[in-house]
Image (cartoon, rainbow, N blue to C red; front, side, top):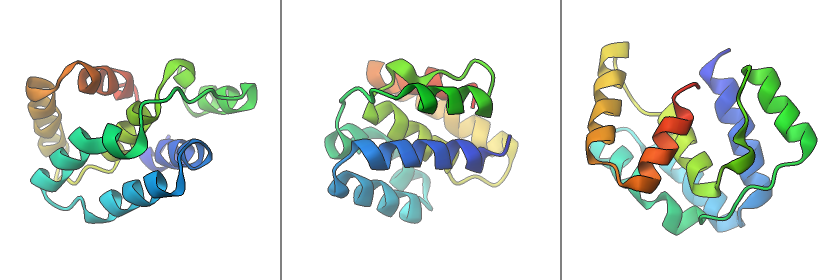
Amino acid sequence: MPVEAYRDYLLTILAEHLPESGVTWLQNQLAAAASEKTFHLAFSAAPRFVGKQPLRLAPEQLAAAGRLRAGFNPAAWTADQAARTVLLLQAPHQSAADYAARLNRLFSTADLAELAALYAALPL
């Protein structure tokens, strides 16, 4: 499954759960996340702009997640986890090795909430 399908799924869900200001912030970050510093700042700041509220997904939304990837079940995800996952899926990189190095740097500096988002996003 292409990464874009996961990203679009999560963006659709977030659009339903976030205030317009949170959606606008996330869209701006996706458009501006060209540098590693910008990406890290957005990844860290996500809860301040999108909140930490549970997503409360409908059964059809959970079924759609399972169709995207077997076992993908964001039932217990929060808005900040979903937003951070979207940022991860869109993280700028030059190669697979560059992307893996970026993830390793995130894992080494992440707080507990960031780690939860990172581990939840790994299958995607």
